[in-house]
Each structure stands twice: as structure tokens, then as C-alpha cells.
Image (cartoon, rainbow, N blue to C red; front, side):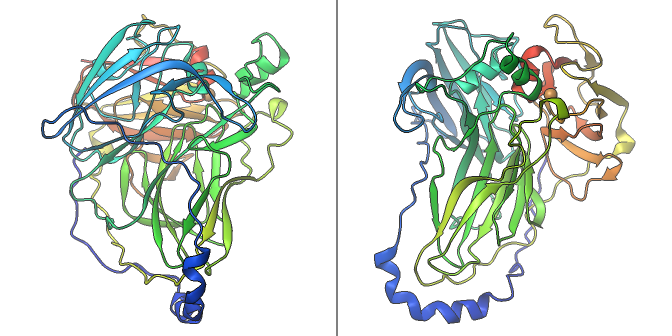
Length: 479
Ligand SMILES: [Cu+2]
């Protein structure tokens, strides 16, 4: 995963009407300052770095039960990292050494999995390495060059991942490059999307697995009717007309897939799970499956004083027999409020972002076929003592993920980024580094991966957490 950045810099094509738009609205400037409204979006705090050594980030993460108010008017018994939901954000640089002191004060074992980070297998926080209730454990790893991007951390205890994340254990993990091509002046926001379901008393609703509701949860994955951004319902972000903001969006939901759109605006899609693309891609909407991340540039193309909404549009990932009645409802996620202020001048954005080396199919020495059933991979459920795939360090392989059933399954490989080759035979239009790919019902996705280092046992699984917990998971061993 070597990323060579190209020194390309030019003004990206701007919406043609903006020039006239700027002139037209300059006369309203005098109203600006007084009516300026503030963001209500909560920004998770950064961890306090306990180390004074250069390029070293040393933090303590405590997972513990607590009570928090998640929805107005009630408090909920939750699990939280350092007492808050989401947990604090890890914000580090390529090359940094991370030392994480994990204190498990939960009444059950847990782990911390650093989703998407390329690190030694022993530090991955996988189900093979549980940390007992009341125990402490240190995770130590170094962030490799070329892996800047947006990641997240969460528990990965076998059969309990969905429960522990639903209880509140998740947080963002941002890795920055020394030569990030996007202007440092862009407001840089992390947006973690989750959903949850509550009883009338504010308690989290986990139905008996033997009940109808419990069986629907197992089939669909547990969805909630309350959708949160950074733990808030419908927060507000302010933007100036003409301004550009960088949003890093993380789908930390157990099962809900988001189809993101802002009515009246196009989005500039600049990055994926493993960081920036080679060049920006204009998009009207973006599908964000479970555990996927995107980097977006949101441009303030509307007039001052107006308001729009980040929404999730209907997306039918479901089997017909358990498809929720309200699946086709558009949901509002956050309010985007245009400041009643003078538009700002367009900023120069790079046309080229970075070079992504090609993983050449001519170098592939094997094709791994993974057939996804409902709760199964290649007809088997997870066995912690079984190795499903063995391969050599240094090998390049193609994985062919075939979804045999009538609902989507987002497929995740731990530890290694891959490049999607094609989806149902259609070549991927651009290269990017991914660690999760959604495999729609009855479709086939192929990706290519190079195991450059880090021997050991690596999980692959469906990232619908209920499916993963039921055993829709396997082990890749690298020697
Ligand atoms: Cu699945």
C-alpha cells in the first residue's frame, strides 16, 4: 500500500452559476453577523496523548457501563468508551506509534478492533484475543505510511459484537498524511452514523432471540428507528455559501445501509475506506454499507440563509419476507444551515489527489470463492479453531464473493485493503482502497488483495453484526 502523491493542483470546475451568485448576494452582507447560527453537531473530543515522545500517541480507553441520555426525556443504561457515546476520536498521523491502554470495566469480555487499520494480527482486537471482564490489555502498533484515511474502533467479541456496539461502544479513528492534498483550511468533520431502538422507559430494546422480533433482527440485522449522527438526533451544521467542507462519514450501524444525498446539491466524493481517491468523483448520492467510510467535499452552492438536509434515501437491502414496512421512507440525518452571511470566494481544489498503485490481476495466484448464504459462508458457520483459507505472505489473490441469497451482505476482510475489480461483471469505474464491500442480493463482487506482510489469523465476515455474531465469518491464515 504505497501511495505516491502527485503534485497536481488546479482549480476544480466550480458550479457555473456561482460567479453570478456571489455578486447577487453580496448586498445582503450586512445581515450576516447578527443572524449567524451555530452548529449543534457534537464533536467527539480527541484522546489526551499521555506521551511526550515524538511520533508516539499513548492513550487510555476504558470501556464501562454507565447511564447516559441518548434520547430526550430519559436515560439509558449503556456501555461507553471513556464515559461517552461515541467514544473519543483517535486522530493520528502516518508513522505514529500507538500505545493504547485498554481497561475493560464491562461485566463481560471484550476487545477493541481497529477497523481497517493495517497492523500485526496480534494487535487487531479480533475475537481470537478477548480481554476478560475487569482485565487490562495494551494494544501497540505503528500506522503505516500511505494508509491515511477514516477508520473506526469497536469491540469484536465473538457472538457479542452487535450487542456491545448497540450498547454504545464505537468511536472514530482518523489517520492523517503528511502531504494531504486537500487544503488544510477546509473544516474537517467526522460524522458517525448509528441507529438504535428503545423501550418506552428509554432502555435499549433487545428482543428475545426466540421471539418474532428477535428472529426478524437475526434475519435483517438489528435496525433502530432512531438515527443518530455523532450520538445526536438531527444535529445542525452551518456552512457559508461558497464554502467547502470535508466530511468523513462512518457507517457504524449494525445493519442499516445509508443512501446519502443532499437535495439540490451534488457531492464531491473524494475518498473511500482506505483514504483518498486518485481524483474526485461527482455524485448525486452515495451508498454507505455497514462499516464503510467515505470522504466527501460538501460545497456551499445554495444561497445564504437557506437550509437543506443530509438525508438517507430508501434502499432495499432486505429479503421480501422481512422487509420493514417503512423501508421506503426517506430519513433526515442532519440539517445543513446556510449562514446568512456574505458568500466566500471559491477555494482552489486539487484535481489529482494521489496515485493509487494498481494491483495487477496477472499477479494473482489464486481465486478464493466465497459463497454467501443466510448466516453462512461456503455453507459453514464460524469455528474459532478452523482455518478456512491459507495463503502465503507476499501473495496476491482474487476474492470472488457470490451472494446466493435475496438480501445484501457487506463483506469485510480484516487487516488488508483491497481493490474492487468488478461488481456483477461491471468493472469498477475507479480505483480505491476498500476493506468492506457491499454484495447486493444475488450479485457477485470480485476484489484483489496483496498480503504484503503481517502473518497470522485474520477474520473475514459479513458486517451485518447479527450475521457476524451468528457465525457468518471465517479465518484467513497467512504464513
Ligand atoms: Cu450478512
